[in-house]
Length: 417
Image 1 (tube, rainbow, N blue to C red):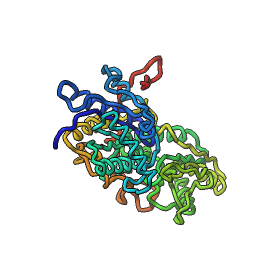
Image 2: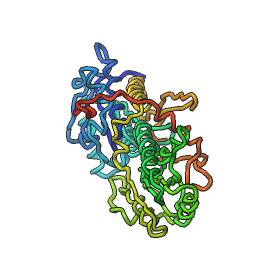
Image 3: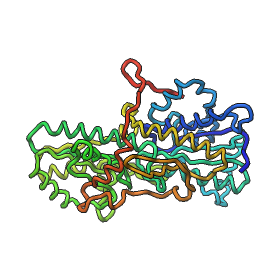
């Protein structure tokens, strides 16, 4: 495959994570490592707010900005998307609608103006849809450009990859906070239930991570409910009664996307109904709905805790495994693109859990975009109210290790682009 000579551009899309900037750092490092006389990439640009920003020509020259190792290290530990993000749904590249055609013509005219020959998009499922559509239009119009998807999502729901960058740090935060909540709840002898609501619309990987402590020190939630199984309120009440016979202070982990058998969200009455550009409704309220239901049935002390945004932005509690892998997958994306790969997404391939061994490869974006990887049946117990030890052991390597976070007067130091 011939080398393409020109510039590269990278963007971030979708919900941010505590590791998405580590992946961005990997892309920057990958480009910087091969720059010089005769290199095929002259400059690396960053698009602010993803495709939306690119359409407005809002860019920054990252290869100029990152002129020292200190800035790169700060980028690795900075949470959220340093370039800004968006939730832009691109039109069908095969559409005959004049408005859709005009969109792509403008977009690719801007890419040509910047002489972009390498396009990297860091994001989750919906972002990979953008990668697929960009690849298709480039092919249709004959524009020479390598288009690469670089995964990120705390939801860990992308198919073909063993896991996704950002998940490990989110899982570490959830497992840690769950341990602390369990300690706090255990100090009283009064009957009480604490509901912890965890992110996860369709896949329950994050909620499953709340139980990792069981294979570490034996502490874990009494009950764990994932969206992969229908939720039954009466069965839930029955399990609470059983658990009360074991000890008085119950802790329950639930996914925000829990649904009844008829498809209604458990927290439906607490939700706004607002949806994003891809039609995904903003979810919340599952914990609160269950809090009210338990209070009415048992009359005991009950509270709900919604972990919310800290799950994805806790840069002070990073998984070293996650950050190191996130940087590596960004660097490998650059190497793959230079070698001629396009229209593909970087993935992790695990060959062993104990000891943990994982390699980086790539897969066609069409096998990933607009699809969901669920927690498998063998990781969920028979009564559908907890996860298995095998699940916990599988997740454990992803949260291992701590990062040497740089602090400034007692607070973590971040970088601003």
